[in-house]
Length: 258
Ligand SMILES: C[S@@+](CC[C@H](N)C(=O)[O-])C[C@H]1O[C@@H](n2cnc3c(N)ncnc32)[C@H](O)[C@@H]1O
Image (cartoon, rainbow, N blue to C red; front, side, top):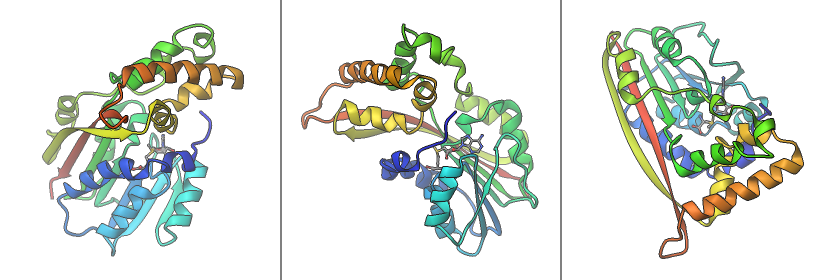
């Protein structure tokens, strides 16, 4: 996959940061010495952690150098490291492992989630938020267009491009036997978007990226045009002309026994 584009990602930063705030609000810690933000992106989620735990040693990790450059500029007081979440292991056990909108890019959740939880200090917290939008029109349509000629061949098996996620019950089952308590919930955000092009721009910063990255430039343009045409039909104009982008997200907060 080509590197991420921090400027494109930050265009909808307020909307993307709201779930990060709501996840952090449910973290049952009054203080923390070591905090890690896995998949920190441009540092928007790390900034929340620094504000909430001003005395903590806060580290952000990401496997995108472009994202880390943006994060370091934003938050010189935090530490940022290039690493892959799939193989990441802390040198010292953190009190909080926080992952907002990143673990959906990492495979093998049946082993990943217990491994992250086991890496916590006693009483530590694993806090995870992931989009749950694979069955939303935005995502069904990106797969549907990619399954057609002339885009199907270069994109390949679109269904294999992203990690298969469990339902909330599956994450609860993975964590409950090891945890003091587990809190899971689901929120469907409704984002008013200016038009279909704005919806396409939003998903281009994240979920659409693996599809577009696989196409040569001429096919990228035709794929995006056809995708936008279908998005336009799937999200009708509301009373003010805007489109309501429904965005389901799942939240998991699990605390280790002290
Ligand atoms: C949707 S952004 C989330 C950014 C930020 N945490 C936030 O709350 O907005 C996902 C981030 O995860 C990073 N990422 C994806 N796969 C990763 C992996 N295997 N290891 C480390 N970072 C990864 C991406 O580079 C990107 O910066």
